[in-house]
Length: 208
Image (cartoon, rainbow, N blue to C red; front, side):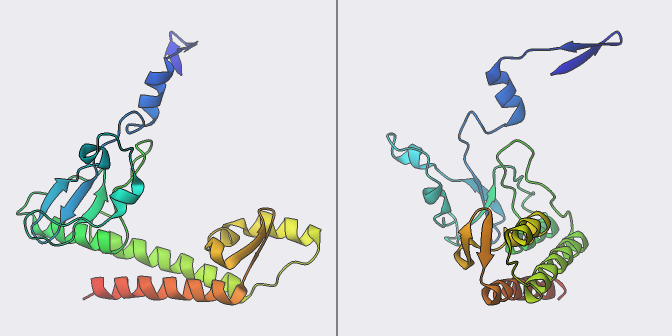
């Protein structure tokens, strides 16, 4: 870390534990995730596995199991550690939070940089989803027009120029080594076609 003192740069050496806390809010302690019930308009902190079994370690699998609302028994949404619950009578914000969740946008983060961009209202959410849709269309177009490289020189150039497209598809439709990836073109086109269909359904629901 650097500091400026009367025109001079001074290096400040901090303890490693303090540096970790500055970089990552959640790096030193395991916090409880915020679960939201959109029907009751309430937020709950779910118990961790270690709270139930003192000898157990933290488990992501346990966190991923659906949890029911203590009040109405409806399934709750895991909104992440950075989620702040709106006031119960703030119907507009709760409706927006529900739309965010249905669109796959939550407040999960490791604590280093926050959950990223969160649309603040319906117009921003629609703009965000339309931008994602355009990105999906570019991916589908890439695989539709793809010609697999043959020589090592072509493969190296292809990886350098198209790694974003190549690494954005699931591993189950890819084969080969890290430096020599090959994908099933038909399945890749189908994958992005399905992603486009899903996001268009979300956009259409928001428009009504």
